[in-house]
Each structure stands twice: as C-alpha cells, then as structure tokens.
Amino acid sequence: MTARPDTFPFNGDESSKLLARVSKQWDADIVPQLIDYVKLPAKSPAFEAEWKRAGQIQRAIEQAQKFVAAQPVKNMSLEVITLEGRTPVLFFDIPGTGTKANGKTVLLYGHLDKQPEMTGWRDDIGPWTPLVEDGKLYGRGSADDGYAVFASLAAVIALDAENISRPRVLGLIETCEESGSFDLPPYLDALSARMGDVGLVVALDSGAGNYDQLWATTSLRGLVGGTLTVRMLTEGVHSGDAGGVVPSTFRVARQLLDRIDDSATGVTKSPVFETKIPDERIQQAKQAAAILGESMWKRFPWQSCGGAHEFTLPTSKDPVELILNRTWRASLSITGADGLPPTSSAGNVLRPYTALTLSMRIPPTVNADEAVAEVKRLVENDTPYNAQVAFDGHGATGWNAPAFAPWLTVALDAASMHYFGKPAAYMGEGGTIPFMGMLGAKFPNAQMLVTGVLGPKSNAHGPNEFLHIEYAKKVTAATALVIAAA
Image (cartoon, rainbow, N blue to C red; front, side, top):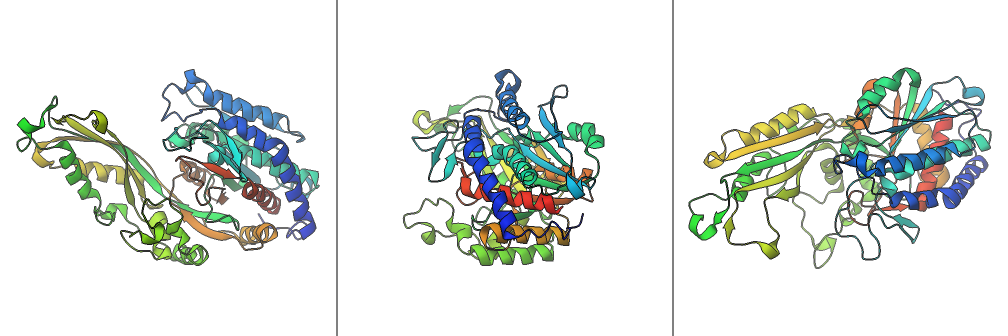
C-alpha cells in the first residue's frame, strides 16, 4: 500500500472539511448513541456467565447494527454473525471508491462488551448512568471501546461525502474482547476468505499519552491471569486456639507471591518473564518521555497527603524507565480475593483458605503459555508447610507491531499535524488486546495502526471512566486521513 500524491498529503482545507463533517456527526448522532450504549450493562462473558440470558450484549450489538444500517453508505453489506455457542460479531463490508477501489482492504476493529462495574464512582454518576460534563462522556464502555464502531463509520462517511478515494473497508466488531477474545479465532477462520487482501488493520481500542497529538501504539503486553488458592484447614478454627500451630493461609500466600516478584520493588524474578527490549522501542520510549515527563507518574490518583510529588516510587521516577516498566517489563497485581470476610464482620478465626486473583502483565514477546506454566511451577512446587496450593491460570500473548511502512508514518504525522499542530507520537501500552496478535498471525503482511482515546485519567476498567469528546472527534478525522492514504 503506497500513498498516492493526488490524494495525500491532504491540504488544510480538505482536512478541515473532514473534521467539520466528523464533528457534526459526533454532536448530532454519535454522542446520543453512546449515551444510550453506556446505559447497557453489556458485561463481557468473563464477568457475566449468563450473558446470553441477560441479553445486554445482544442489545449492544443490535444498537450498533441499527446505527450502521442507517448510515448513507453506498453498497454496504451488513450482518450480525453468531456462531454456535459464541458471542456475536457485527461485520460490515464497504466497497472501495475512486482510484483506490481495487486496492488492498482496510479492516476496522472494535468491541462492544464491557468490564464490570467496579466501585468508587462519583455519587452523581455510575457505570450505567451516563453524564456529559466538561466535554467528557462518563460511563462504562464509552471510551473502551463503544465509540469505535460509530467513529469508524463516521470516518468513512466523511471521506465519501468529500469524494476522497479510499480502499475497501471492512468492520469487525466483537463482543468478547474484555474476556480475552476467546470467541474471536473461529470468526477469523470463518470470515478470512471474505476479508481478502488486508493491507491495513485499524484498532481504535488503545491509549493516548496526552490529548495534544495523535498516538500510535507500538506494542501491547501479554497477560497471565488466574486464581491462586491456598488451603490449610477444612474449616475455620479459633485463632487463639490454633494461632502458632496452624500457619495462616495468607502468610503462605505471601511467601508464594515472593517467588514471583520482589515485594519491595515489584520486579519479577524468573527469566521466563523477561525479554530483550528492542532498540527501536527504547528510542520511542525516550521520545514519549520527552513529551510526557513527570506526567508519567503524576497522572495517577495517588493517596498521599502532599499529592504525587510526595510519593516515593518503588523503582525510579525517570519517565523513560517508567514507560519501559509499563510496556516491556512484567508486573504482578492482586486484583481480587476470596476467603476474607469484610472487616466489619471478621471474627477471631483462622480461616481455612485464601484465594487471590493474580493479574500479571508480561512483555509483548514473552510466550503466554510458558509464563502461565512458570507461575504454576513457582507456586505449586515445594509448598510451605505442605499446604494445598493450586494455580488455575490462563494467558494471552502480547503483540509487537511490525515496522511502520513509510507511507503510514507520513500519514500519521500529517494527520496529527493537521488536527493537533504536533507530529504523531509512538509508545507501547501496558494493557493487552489479544485480537492484535490474532490478526497479526492471520495477516502477517498487513500494517497495524492501534490508536485510541484512553488518555490521562480516562480510567478504563476503573471508576469514572470517560471519553474525551473533542479528542475523539480528531482521532476519528485522523483515522479518515489514514484510511484514504492506505
């Protein structure tokens, strides 16, 4: 795929018209659609076992289908596809136009399933209670990733309205991403023949270092998740009677976790969780660090009396190291627990078991299956006090972007300059999008643009998630420029 001089780079008038069209559709149509979408508790199957009976995922995909069907796009085919026992996907196919009608295909990706509620929302809003305030739309899924299907269509519509040639565009919107996209491979197999020669994949499901320029994601960490369970007793006993005789399962769990990482620094101990960081990624981290500076750690809601500047980090405040820590190094978090009663009702009882949910991000090029096996080996072998220990885990391998083709680099910088007055920036993300690894394997020669609106404090997966509306408009228009340049 090469940029054509007759259509790229765009002049200021053309790019301004695209942004004006996109902005108008966002204000009149997309924001109201997203307000309705936020109201749907369309939790991913990992968090809603009875998702089919609940019907919320179906409502979300039907809303998106209705929106897409109503758009003024010529010769578009559209369908909701549901394989037996799988979450549904929305698939649309829009023929190319003008001089690029017979070029390679552009595949646009998004998802409609959501993370669970989480606690800590402001009193006046909630995960399913949308609020537009100060240019932000608050609510679960607004930025992760409900906007993607609406923004994708808006980009195509704006190009067609301005008679700008573009390639064939496909849309693949899934409903299992927050569960690791375990339903997606069968759909890729079923649809691959219909997708044709995919030359560019655009995934609007990632982060932004700030709201001042366009950001391209260069890598995504993998994930090891699962439950560590430690058992010592068949039932709880009086802590005064058994304390000093029966080891606490929490203490055993602490010892086992110390086998995985250093409790003082968070640095993982096994070489299985490590990889050599490519020189290009180090240089990109330096570029991003020069842009973001201390915001790399000050942007988080630290619970310290003097604010973030009073807080001591376990390793370094060097923004380059912090970027590499969150993108190319492993980190372990404990995200849930069972066997622990609430403090208000906890008695003097030595509990029979402790179960902890482990979430370990691993470097992009580390094999997830090997990492899961290593965690299992570390915690289950030679257990303290011969405790009964089990780790029930799963993994998702990360993704390292192929080298950006010159045309794509030019397109990204031009789009960012048009809409932000600054060149594009490049940085890895600490999260996991299993879809990218799947698409990379399915279309190894395709260019991959992973970008998104999850900038500072947008708080995907947490309380008070929001979508920055003005930034989303510009990302949509920038996406249109990149599609036309493909």
